[in-house]
Amino acid sequence: MTNQDTPVNLSHLKLYYFKFNEEISKVYIGRGENLKLFIVDTGIPHEYHQYNWDEWVKHRDDWINNRGYIPGALPAIETADGKLFGLTVPTLRFLSKGLKKYYGNNAIDEHWVDMISDLANDWYAEFDPSVWPEDYLSRDVYLEKKRPHHIERLDRLYAAKEGPYALGTEISFADFQVYHMIKEDKLTVLPPHLDAFVKAFEARPNIKKYMEEKKND
Image (cartoon, rainbow, N blue to C red; front, side, top):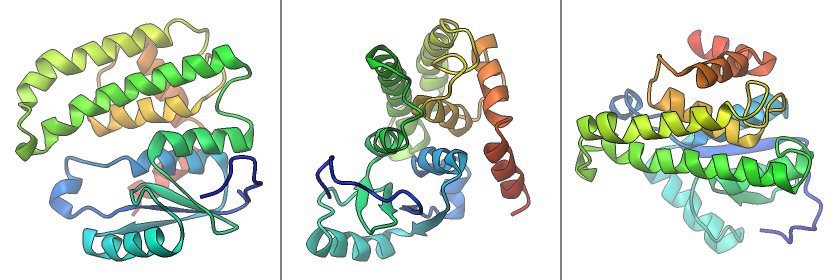
């Protein structure tokens, strides 16, 4: 980890996350995809390394003990100069600040982006237990009582700006979280403003290319 004022080389990135088995992959993508989509959109050359749990434990212990990566959690990125940074939203925000984009142009923009980012996290927190049987949140309860609230609230916020994204015409890191949740939750019918957002997001050149490549995998 580094002091935030220390220059960091973002010319190349390595993204690290879990590799789920086939059964889990049918219902769950995971938070690494937020960062994958973000990095794809930036155009930064990168590698994507995915570990099963046993592989990750070995790397985790080495990172904690020998590389100063105290969190010991994924997702994480490694910059071109070998520095490790982790967790979803902090890393999205860190990269946005380093790139001087994806975070608006002033403190008011930043607050708006952070607010929508938090709401996307709230949605994730209620979605996640509904796909893991051992977490005991009924999928029916989630679909009937929880999900509609998150969708309605986010659509209202996206309606507040002129343009398809959270900030209007400029994309932000929070948009990647919201899009990921829509896809993670396998939503195909959306209210108008979220629907317009998804169409604009998927039309972004690097995102469109990435999705076409995934279909052909």
